[in-house]
Amino acid sequence: MTEDEIFMMIERDSMEKRRRTRQVLLEHGRPDLAEELDRNLREVDNGIAGAKATWHSISAAQRRALTILADGYELRRASYSRTKYDGYCAARKRDALGYTCPIGTVRALCARELAHVNGGALDPEKVIVVTERGKFVVKHGQQTPGA
Image (cartoon, rainbow, N blue to C red; front, side, top):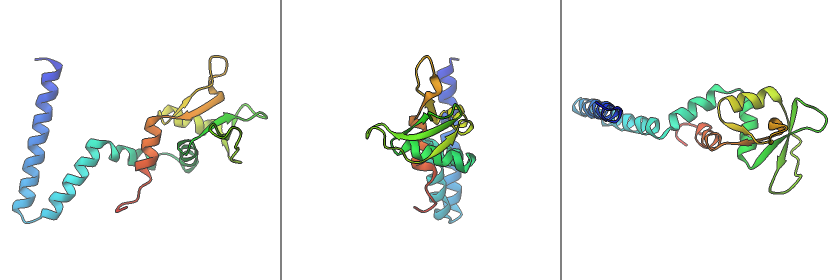
C-alpha cells in the first residue's frame, strides 16, 4: 500500500465519520449544531482555526509587530542599536512609524514562520518582512466570533 493510498483511506474514514456525526445531530433534531459543526470543520480545513490559535498564542508585542508588518511595513535594524528594530515603509521610502521592536520579538515571529529575515548575506537580520503565513494569521486570527 502506497503513502497516497493510506492518506486517501484516512481521508475517506474522516469524511464518513463527519457524515455520520452530522446525521446523528439531524436525527436528534439539532440542525443548529450540525450547521455549527460544518462551520467549525470548514475553518479547520481552511486553516482558519490554526490561524486563530496562532494569533492567540503569541504575545501582545508580537501581535503588534506582526500587524505592522502585515500593513506593508518592514522592520529594519535601528542605526543606533544591534538589538532594536524600527518600522519602515518600503513603498514610501523612509516613512518611519515611531515603533521600536526588540530582537527577541522579531526572532519569535521568525521561529513561527510569521516573519522572515531578508537582510542579505552579511547581515541577515538587518531587515524583517512578513510571510504569507503571517498575513493569513493577521487576517483571520484577530477576527472576533460573529464578525
